[in-house]
Amino acid sequence: MLRRDFSRAFVASSALASLTAWPLTVRAQGPAALREGRDYVRLARPAPVDAQAGQIEVLEFFAYTCIHCYNFEPLFEDWKKGIRSDVLVRRVPVAFSEAFVPLQRLYYALEGMGQLDALHRRVFQAIHEDKQRLSNAETIVAWVGKQGVDTKKFTEFYNSFAVAGKTRRAVQLQDAYQVEGTPSLGIAGRFYVSGQGPRTLVIANALIDQLRRG
Image 1: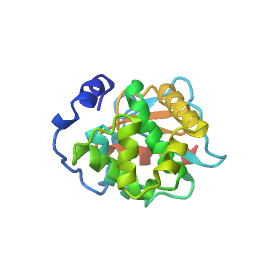
Image 2: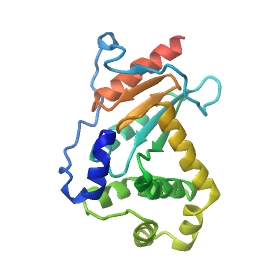
Image 3: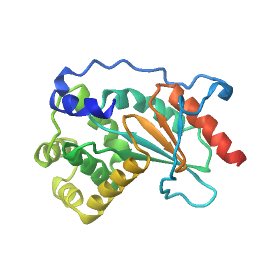
Image 4: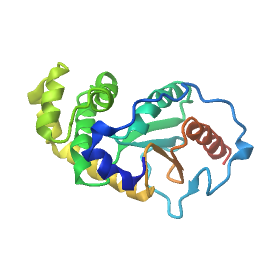
C-alpha cells in the first residue's frame, strides 16, 4: 500500500478489501528480465545495516494495517524457509505518521517477549478479518490479554526505552531506504524493492545472488 493511502485506510479499516491470497511459492523467473529503476532501485546513499561481515541483510518493511502486507506474509514466510545462512532477515514496522507508533510498539514488545512467532500473524488477522481497531495502547493491551499474554509484563515492554529506541531505529531505516509503500524490501543497504507480489521475492533472490558474486 502506498504512503498516501495509509491515513485513509487507517481510519476506515473496516472498508478494506477482502483477503485475496497470492500463490505461496515463488515461481521460477529468470533474473535477466530485471531492470534497475523498474524492478528495484539502487540507493544513491547506502542505508545502515546491522548484519555482520559476510551476511546479506534483507528488511521487510510492513504495516499491520496494510492488507497487501497481510497477503504477502505467508509468501514471505515460505521464502524465509529456503534462504541460505548468509542471509539475515528482519521485519521493520513502518510509521508514516504518529498513528502507526502503537502498532510499531506492539511489534517490538512482542519481539522482546519472544511472542512474535505465536502472535505476529494473529495481529494481522485481528485487524483484517476480525475488524478490530488496535489503534492505541488501551485496545492493544486488551487484545494481547485475550491472547493469553501477561498484560503487566507486556505493558512494561510496550513502554520501555528499548522498544522506544527500536521504533526510532525503524523510522531511520524507513527514511534511509525512502520507503513509499508496503510491503517492500530493503537489501544490504543498497537496494530497495517495492511490493510486486510474488515477483518481489524473485527480484530479491536475483539481487542477493548478485551481491554474493560481488
